[in-house]
View (tube, rainbow, N blue to C red):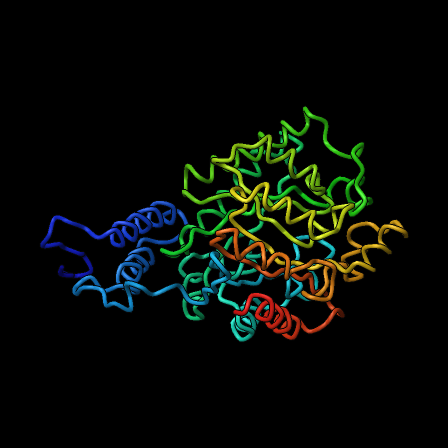
Amino acid sequence: RRVHGGIVSFSSAIMSRAFLSKMSRLSRVSSVAHRAMGSHKLQLMRRHFVTSSIRYDRPASAEEATAEPKGVIHVGNSTVQIGNAPCSWGTLEFDGFKADRVDYTKMLDELVATGYTGTELGDWGFMPTDPFKLKEELEQRGITMVGAFHPVFLKDESRWQKGIDGALQIARLLAAVATPEHQPFLVLSDENGKDPSRRLNAGRITPELGLTAEQMNTFAKGANLIAAAVKDETGLPLAFHHHCAGFIETPDEITRFLDATDPDLVNLVLDTGHFVFGSADKSPQRYIDFMNQFKNRIPYLHFKDCHAEIARQAQQLNWDYFKAVEKGVFCELGIGCVDFKAIAEWLRTANYNGWITVEQDVLPGMGNPKDCAQRNRDYIRSVLNG
């Protein structure tokens, strides 16, 4: 094998699986990035992508052949990597929570300093939207882009096209900064908090507040269409984020949604805190049973805790969703009622191989985000032994 001017030539007709995988990813990145960056930047990115991690002018060393991505933790027969998200630094998608945002460079620096190896994108514009600049920021810190949250009011068909356009804008950026080891998730969600009945009753949803069968089919059709558009153009996977104050909150609603969507297009990011807050039954067995039932449709996990006493107050005092968040219903890991040790036991036998992203909605006055991130990482280390 020889490298001439950045172009790989082969003396053998047999190409390695690793090379084919890498070049396939390069082709995908090139096709979706043309509209987002100039040809000069794309050429530089292509040259770096081909030569940065594996040199093809020599056989791979034994260490390279067996090397794992940075930060991999073995939990029984599962392998996980741990990321964090901009919301843990107070960057939430809701208009009322957008003041006093931390700069993305500080957020990423603190994320790395506290032991995480992956991040989500945050709101569009929080991190650079220039693919070359974003890739540079990630690579210089050794961070993987795990995914990006995209809310769409799926109940209303008139919102679908805008939702597709926004999803593709995000997906093109994600594809341009993808690594050979991970395809970022387009994390689709309802436009949570938009419907007053759902916002005012988050954490205590009753069946009559839910979607009818016809409405659920419409909702699911919109999710399928967005997932198909993202997959067709970028090849990226879509994972739906159930969320309190949206129409997919309770375990029953999540089940109905999964039953109504195409498993080849739409899967689930299981968020532990939202699941527990949205469930009348907050026992560990409830979410472990759910995770077993839909194990094959959960490629991505969010670790979020739920403060039992604040959740109880929200129910008794009829707080809306935003009041509950402001009061700290989503607390540091290990303080709330989510049984992460039970989830660790689930991981040991689940053959789950993917990312776990920590999400703690740290708003101004709720603590120092870096300190919270460190304690959350330390807690995960104590539970997962890594």
